[in-house]
Amino acid sequence: MTEILKVNAANPQTERIERAAVALRQGKLVAFPTETVYGLGANALDTQAVRRIFAAKGRPGSDPLIVHLADADWLPRVAAEIPPIAYRLAAAFWPGPLTLILPKRDEIPAQISAGRNTVGVRVPAHPVALALLKAAGIPIAAPSANRFGRTSPTRASHVLADLGERIDLILDGGETSIGIESTVLDITAPEPVILRPGGVTAEQLAALLGKVVVAGDVPEHEIPPSPGMLPRHYSPRAELIFLIQPERAAALAALRRLAEDEIGRGRRVGMLLVEEDLPYFAGLPVETASLGAQNDLWQAARLLYAGMHSLDARLVDVTLTRDLGEAGPGLALRDRLRRAATKIVS
Ligand code: TXA
Ligand code: MG
Image (cartoon, rainbow, N blue to C red):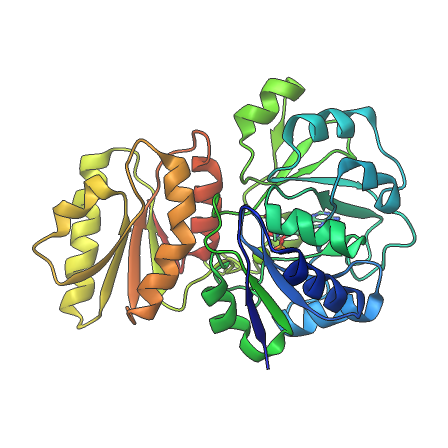
């Protein structure tokens, strides 16, 4: 049986955190909230526990895990070399949604880094995650708490629905505040490279680093065997059509044609759009999920996965959504939607 423990998100109850910390030290799997998404945690120094994460998620061993720390002071426990830039980035963005790729210490199981000589680390900015890390006293490996390829969880109920009986304990700290995953920044190369855009924006990093490179949309090891065979990730159950059209009026007209076409084929359609776009589809028999106000992409990030989960719960066959540009969190939104999409229309 999976146990669900409600915790106060701002001021977590000590005895509940302690129970979760004991479970982690015993090698069990504990899901917990971070400021980005819920993580599926295990003792990062325990190879068996780390193996259980991969088994529970159905995740291929080739996909490395992020190790969570209570404080930048813990870096020497996991990283073999820590360049000065790591401490500058930590001072600016930790606790927070930035994962740094650093040379790995031998004590970190090879499974965590999928056989590479690097390790991804971050200090999460959530009182529950930080309290858990401090109480456990160990680095915690934690991928997003969803089955491999599925939509990441922003609520405990999402974790329960997706991973259910596969995990021992879920700490329920309510909704996560950022809603999309951390930015993954590789600082082992001569020039820092964003491997995954996320909760710390490219603009924020450029302000500190001067220049920052964004890796190609599809990582080299994931290059699809043939066009149209993009690896799906972050995906809802429903099909997802992602429209990339910078001109709003043209985008809405195209979405309407797509929606009418799907409805005509007898399919149940979901619209995942900013508030201002939704009235445009008022006359159509569609399910809707709002991404909040058009001028607030942070709100869109917070509502993205929750919207996908909500439309899935309403059993839509296909969801239509559109690109919101690349400013700030827009780049991360675009990345997740491209990977979640069954079809990209531009
Ligand atoms: O916000 C987050 O990062 C959440 C919360 C729970 O902290 N975690 C998360 O983990 O998103 P996951 O496993 O779903 O995604 C980890 C990402 C993957 O894209 C993985 O390839 C990359 O980080 N990564 C981890 N270690 C790496 C390494 N050593 N080298 C390159 N990429 C790495
Ligand atoms: Mg994930």
